[in-house]
Image (cartoon, rainbow over the protein chains, first blue to last red):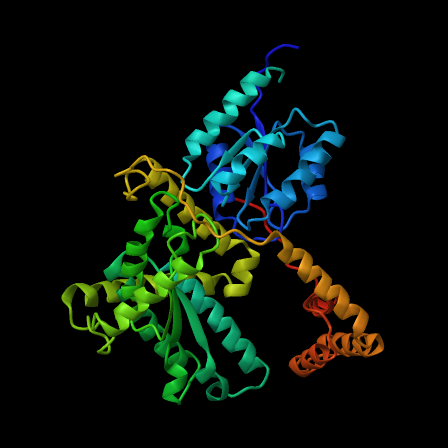
Length: 138
Length: 307
């Protein structure tokens, strides 16, 4: 497959019940400004809704924002659904209020990056670009 | 300015709805109360609260013809600004919260919530919450800041800032009025766009180094992860699920169904729904069941997931 210059497609999603989406929207906009195509799901999404949106929008990256503390309850199911749908090549990143001690368990689920409060938006954009480049096939 | 204008646009919509339902303004307006944030910029925040007080009195008196002075009073709660809490060097959030709380006190807040130092990382621990309470107590009992009404009144700087903010907030409110008021503006996505815009601008300024955030883009130190964050009991969720299951088994189901049905009927009409809600609660309906009645009748808010 040849290397194309299509913009990276990103789904920004808010799983679970917390309504704090200021951060998710700021990041969605920053990624768009850095040249990516970004779709935002809105708040209160179920794992099924998120995975369906990822399929329909044919995204390269799924970025989820969780500020409720429920990341360890919500994310294993979403990763499982992605595997079932054969979407394991999607780069999954997570941000929000996530204690340092939960970072490794999340990475062990197959999540590529965990970003806490104060992360610069350019660092996230660079992370995505590097991961997508590593993945190669676009 | 944006906060004050959005708040009063909403309040006007509520007051109009109550008047539209046939209530005389002075019958309910003395019970209207507000909730504001207390942000970092000390004098701007004090001026904001002062401007808000003047604006509300004018709105109630001139627009709604209120006669009772209590209808024109701005009763408000203030909470320190969660968005200013940093995950970096969490202890310095105590100082941010102190400045913000002081602004609320100097601005005449009747009620105050001081956030905790560790809330950018987790729900606060008891120790952190106690430090927040002590912050309030020092302001209340040691600083003297709460001893007089409007202690900054007459200061050239604060008075001119108050005038500027009042002027700008009334102009911005006018824009919302031109859209048809708060409800129409929400449906057009106006508030959401404006808030998104200012959140993004703020973030851009921080990342460009145009706005200093101590510990984030200036005076950064290498630090180990903050120790002693609140850990939630993993059993708690299970226990709550079991409690609800037990409740569902033990309650009188026919009474529950009858109460929910009555609430559904009342919600479809124009009567006060509170007595019907109370009846549901007394019949041990769950919060989820009661909310579902309203979802069935009114539907849910359609999100505009733009950014």
